[in-house]
Length: 460
Image (cartoon, rainbow, N blue to C red; front, side, top):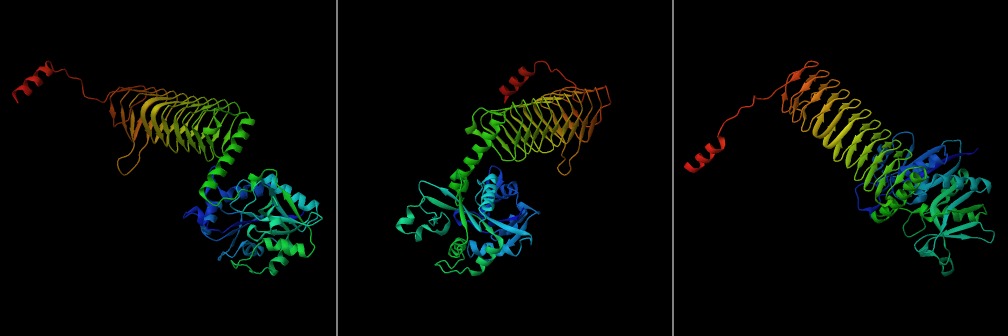
């Protein structure tokens, strides 16, 4: 099978975005535009990915990482010029080159594969991905000959009245025979007002030479939507999120209201899980089966087991075991690990802590830098005092311990298994296993305190 390279054009600034960030790094569904394109061409089975970078190129490289070939386009001299920069970086074994734009995130890998298959079946030297649209205004038109071969792509401003009636438009995605492409690029000239090298001129060259160039129309024109401004970014976001929601619902996930549910591309959800409205699932979040999530819940890079109930909760980089109950109004910060059967209730904040099986933190509590054993009950208003203004310290609580309400646990501190902490205590020393810790002033009763206060006020 012929080896294929994908050349992704990602050098443009995107002035209409009015942003300091390179256009291709703006995100939809939690991934940069260019990352969507890279993922889809890899799904299509290409052998090499070459990214042509320019404006903000180092930032693009940092975002995508290693594993790809990068070619620099120092000057923005058109799409043909961009492809020229990539050619020297192609592996010698490459025979086909598919060219795509880094700002077309809705293009599916299946469509790219179909383009490659059609190219091979037709024994073509060039292929153009096209679309039929009701209003082709502003797009390049596909001009065919009597044999239905593509002979030219004419821009809207250069089209004749007859050509303006053509509804088939250019997507900006192409497939070429590598050798023919190299020859055509050498002949390109910037003979236009902009003084740029246009890749569309390659198609016209091939047509003049009588080489076979085919057009492959997509079924869904939305696939070729390019992003040039924030309004188009939002439109693409809506399309992509609808795809995600449809895929999840068809796989056995219930979305009570898909229109108010926002799920990133990488998120995985098990069957029979129900997602309630106004829930946001970001990054690499993974949710198991038979869960109830939401409403008003925001999870980022969080792992959730099976049979979990989460309401009105924010969690980031947390691990939640099976059959846990979280919320409402809980905040799980990075490093939180909840084992099976843990309960975290209202107005509880946890960070960088492990809670073992069956432990409960029902309400109004802060747990930080702690190791909490099995079947521990933490009373309302408890605080782990883990920070002295300079350093963080750890609190360790053994299995089966009961922490009374309104307790302050001043770290570093270790409380043994099956111990008790009296309500209102402030602990600064370790508590042995099985003992009761009382750390508060003895209660005193002062009779007639109210009368004394009243008399004193009258005198003043």
